[in-house]
Length: 233
Length: 229
Image (cartoon, each protein chain N blue to C red):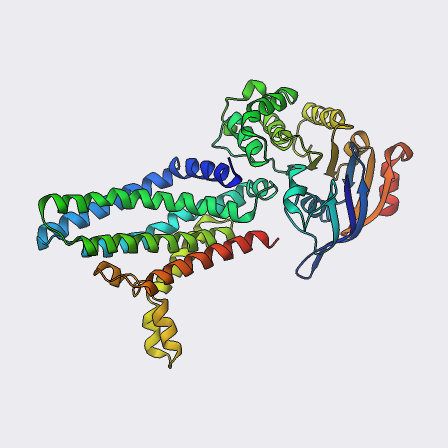
């Protein structure tokens, strides 16, 4: 097994057996189920637009809790030193931590597809926006987990890592609001930084490469910076 | 086996290790002696690859720690001062994980774990969760994880810190037992421990290497240390 495989196996075990994972999973599914039931019974419309926006908020709030432990816990326990003195590349350590956190989010998103299944069984939903919504959630999760992992690699305090991640997500969420007080062309930059601005088109069924590029570029940048943070010692 | 040429390490404006040149032979036990803040741990961390030198050259078994870091790290086993271990794992899992991570072939892992566990007398706790280990067992498992891939160089940071007298004697005997088979580099600020354990001693002060002496030619280490520091 490659070093990445060995590390990923360990990280997946640690992630899925952690009480944090079960607590986050429970909250996620409870709130998502509540939102789905409420929107379905109130609007009686077979779409998941409202649910996707709720899941967006849930990911912004819960991903920091999932990623806060990845590096901060190991740094505090001293075990990060064991990983960094082993003959493995820093990128393997980063990817293992990143993929295990992303896997937990993916499991939650897969569980939430039961809502789409319920709609398909009892109604005739437009599957385009549903597929777009899940693609958006996947891309959003990849970026949020990347940024959360980056913050966790910088500090040994899990609460600081979670707070910094949440702060970053909220700043990105409302980045386009800052544009109103900025001159051209800087305002355009902040409009394009918006987390929600790149999310909403997917949910309405419009998939733009630029929106996907935003999430993918952000994810790669976060992973690059995390690797640099580990390598710079 | 280990060569340092004009190795310097800076953390911003702080000079942690200053222009150290030193070589350690195969199978030798070398002690780094110095007060707190003398640069012992920084030097050990550079040897393990946890930190890289700001300038100078450091090679392990001929592999440059900056240009060939993976090859250099493959030949080193490291026991940090706090004996960090994965508390959620059982001892066997912990040792198997470290063996796999350090490149032991999949089919050879079970044998390597059994062998190192027996040599360090931790075979009776292989199925015990790490968080339930006593301090003495924890220290032995920490050494076992560093030896499981049969490294050429074993690096120990303050190995007897916090141990009771019996555990100190056991650790000393263990390190002496490795002499000849493996190059051992250990740090300590306890003069008597260094005097009883190592073949040669390197005395550090404020990041600089003051002297390197053979223990056979140093009957009074305390007097030497006081004369230098």
